[in-house]
Length: 165
Image 1 (cartoon, one colour):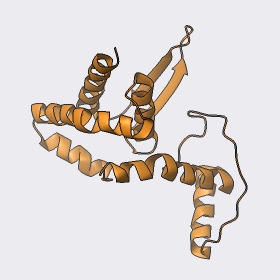
Image 2 (image 1 turned 60 degrees about the vertical axis):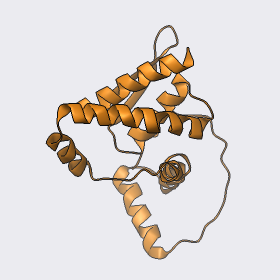
Image 3 (image 1 turned 90 degrees about the vertical axis):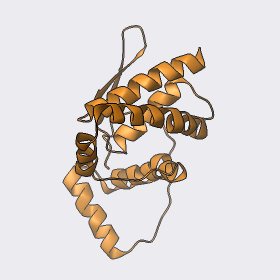
Image 4 (image 1 turned 135 degrees about the horizontal axis):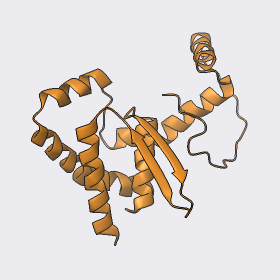
């Protein structure tokens, strides 16, 4: 769940607080920080960020975590049209509601920010964002769920464009 700290850097004001945690949890956090080559402070900040911006949100939306291998097996065992239909229904039923619930309105930037969260924290794949020479967002999504995510992204794009124009 560790997110690359170079992604979506925002100027954020920090505060200093102290917490009591079990020694076992502390040692596990230290091991993870060492493994990911980040400071313990960075790791804890990212864990808080993941909870505040992702975990609470998916719980409210009735989403669940699933092993990537299990999801891949379900997709592989499903007919292509069924996968496409499920992606369209998910985007229609969950995508709009999720964006409005989290951001207050359905806009292209809000949908893109939602994709950032799902890729960065939800394990959907890799999310890379840059700016074009004209200042537009250029987003590259790297994933192994080609059919599901391509249909979902296409439907979101068409649906958001239709609803926001």
